[in-house]
Length: 309
Length: 185
Image 1 (tube, rainbow over the protein chains, first blue to last red):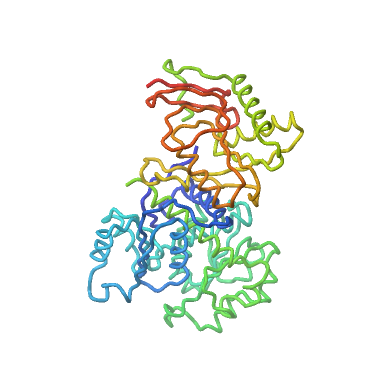
Image 2: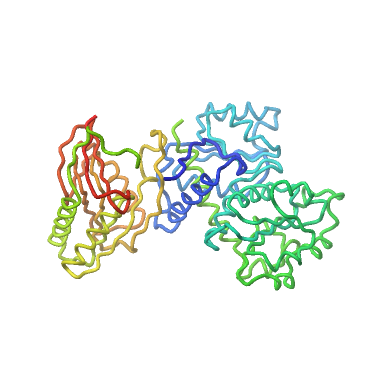
């Protein structure tokens, strides 16, 4: 009836089939329901150990994974870059081998280098879940965005999805592009030409440098965070200029269809990529994304961590 | 599963009419045992338990003119063998009428075997609330319990060997005529 899940790892949306993505989203429906129960904890991963291995800082993704694992009754250990032996010069592989020797069943990895999760997945028996690797992929964010669109619009096929901002350095954008195009959405990327190069057209998306032209037809607008900490001057004109040209201001939001969804992976820079009133407005599904992130991560941990190894 | 048609080793146990009669009797027993019928909830275990619960509710509606509430209780995430089986059970969304306090919840499944599924179902139900009592109805009880669990309502007792397989087919869930088969290995 459906594709059965056979993967021990979740590395990215690029390698997943349409059936696999739909299967994850359907599994997440069941786990979202768990959040409405009086007791929001199920024994699915009892006895399993999950290690949150975050070599790059993160609060919301790490917390979401930790909560998801707790709700599945797994034991959770958090390791961040500052507290790991990586600072003493240990290699990623050696640190991970130590985790495996301690019987870590699932390792959730965030790393600044693209491909780090794949590197570990090929070398360890543990399940590896990519929680963001460099500018490559952030598959659970992509999945929770898909889940939220599907929940609110009851389909993904044939929708116009506009992704605005720093596409070049965004793993969220890549995971969204792979997932959305596979499920039949039309994706348009918007931003300064330095951050939205023509190269992306190869992924089957359209590119625009004028946000006012694409907003009226949009069914979903996903605003990416302007990553101050990563921006270099040659790519980025200046915050004020960015907001003037690409920010979703109150005035621009009037161009949107009334049922257009406004999404943001967070954390939000209020007044930069989005005005405060728009972020808190009726069309914003930012907090739904957070709630759905928990359900999607529970589904992923159940599927990858639950298969017999 | 669908491609596996009954072979010569398959023994027919029940046909559509027999299943119909058995479920009608189970419906009557439920009515007899539960004077406060309005408090009863029939909670089916996916997939076939849900369909069987629906049919029992229909029989009760027919004879008693009372609408019995039904629900779905999924056990996949409450099983104790996740990671030990080659195939991961597919999780379905559970749906139960809330609150459960004061209600009589009847778990409905197609085949009662080791009792582990029922244990998982009771675990799942307790995360929704605390029903006044939980009862158990099964179309087939084939024995071989591994836990101290017994059914309150049984459509048919089917003594079987552990090496045999019981297969239930229902029109609505399998797209095949209603039937119960016993497979000799």
